[in-house]
Image (cartoon, rainbow, N blue to C red; front, side):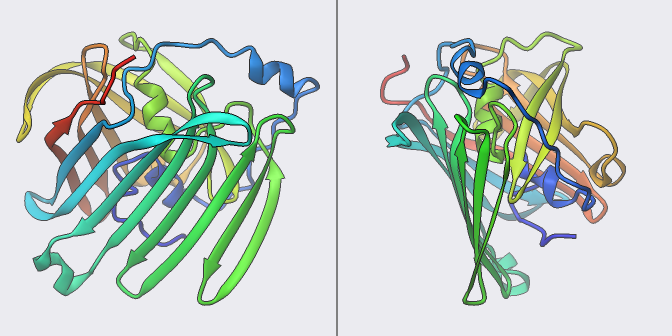
Length: 273
């Protein structure tokens, strides 16, 4: 089993961290470039400058803080991408027991909504790891590079069409209409493996967080097929029931307890297109 990631249980990569080590999914296509170009384009409910801040509680005890933000647009492999950034850190009290300083970045295609590049810098207790995955959608291949304990390692593999990394997956879901009872299939990548993911739309609820009271749609990401996550934990996300689909609350129930990430502040994008 891989190292536990402090913010991972909240954002979709938590699913992959606790999964069993099964063989990765391989998907092929005879006309990959055409498949990539034919994906429907939706209007973005977010943009550069958007920032969401959270407080993280473990069993109702304050444990730390996290944020999600879109820093800029950049060119990656000739395509325009949003640069999405997340950061998680424990508070001073939790630092005494287990200090966390995690940073993750995703470059998400602004037209096709898939991931072009993903980076992570994990610092949890005495564990440190950096990695980068570059996605080539034209050839449906990826290259994964990991740095740990002074050693650099590489892995290349096939890629699922329109794959999402764990950050871009959350932002892609925000672009969807979300019908009650709907199950949305996604192609996802974590580290050096591809995995099928299903997003279940569970219902509408009104919830209160430090950042306000909101009418929300509750969704649950689950592994498609057999996986350790389905037996050991559960992740739920509350998105505002409006055009912006802001993730105002995330909750994880795992074997070691329950975590909540509640929005404490929201900064809108500079220009919502």
